[in-house]
Length: 113
Ligand SMILES: [Zn+2]
Image 1: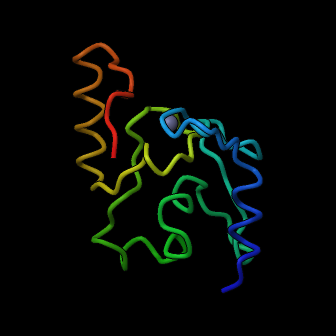
Image 2: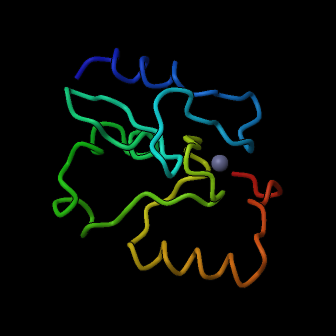
């Protein structure tokens, strides 16, 4: 494990001073807007690396029962770890349903650690 991967990663993210803002991925994105990062010759989703670091390389089934990295902010290219959480696929779907039914609530900036 060298630090270069993570330095390389964060150099592609628009890191803001404000930790409540979305930090958007600046490099390659797919059609859905998700950022992709090459790590050890493997493409991985940028927001997964943002939250999990090298654990993002683990096969999905080895890792927290196939849980996924979800966005609180509904911004697929966002890599702000504060906006990311580990959830099951079902959580993610429920989150989307909840958000739709409450007409797109923006990520609350009032929460503080
Ligand atoms: Zn965000």
